[in-house]
Image (cartoon, rainbow, N blue to C red; front, top):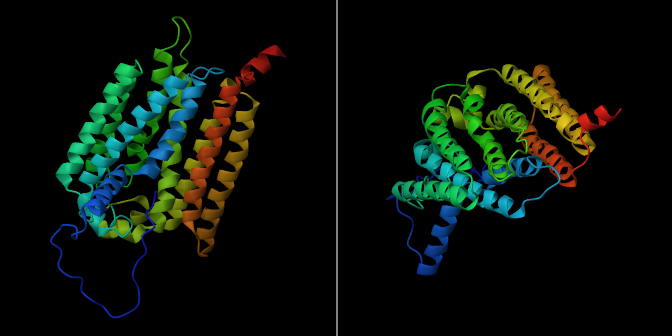
Length: 338
């Protein structure tokens, strides 16, 4: 998610005073609050919200018609710690470019609210705590393993390798954001009675939905902040390709995302089917409008598609969650009954 930090404009140019890299002196209580808020910001709360939205439908769909409340809560807490770990370590890696980009210059490490060493320790502790939490309390070491894979992939493969080297960074790096589905599915299925089908193919479909949704979501944001990424030397697709080429790819990935959601319709009921189709049409129409606007050479607002993409994914997953909680007859069962 983007930071809403205003930029300065107007007035005489004044050079800022030299910074020692340390926060300004403040009272003890104020300083303590500032540090706590900095650690919270380090976890990227708004990004975690989206990851938890992805986890909830998997927790419910894995055993339709049953709500394992204790497992749901344990998974959400463990998943939050894992995502917070990955995000914190990502900020440690991105420390240099965060100081260059206006969108990220107010992040805690970029403004020296806390040290990189403290952030590194914080991220590592959260990662270990997340794995132990899921393994010991949620009784799923498979989920703990998925958390480990998520952290390593996001920090090493995406942040340290792909992000700065290829315009396909978010295509493959986005796989880390899909892992909450596997974590959630593992927790539920590891606690199911012996002999009950695990239906991992459904988890794979949900993984692919998020995988193909991530590029158009991220590229729309990158179109808005193209100059920021260019200044930081990050080869996001809008930096290295024309807007027409980018929007064409956004449209393609949007279509593939919607098709993936439809692959899950046989395993869900009518509520999800209507939601997947309705929200899918909305998403596709808006992607085509963005592409058409670029082709006509008129001013476009890619940030609108970025926000809409969040609403799209939330809408589809809420529909699936409600459908799963109600335990409605699935579309495949309806067809079989004809």
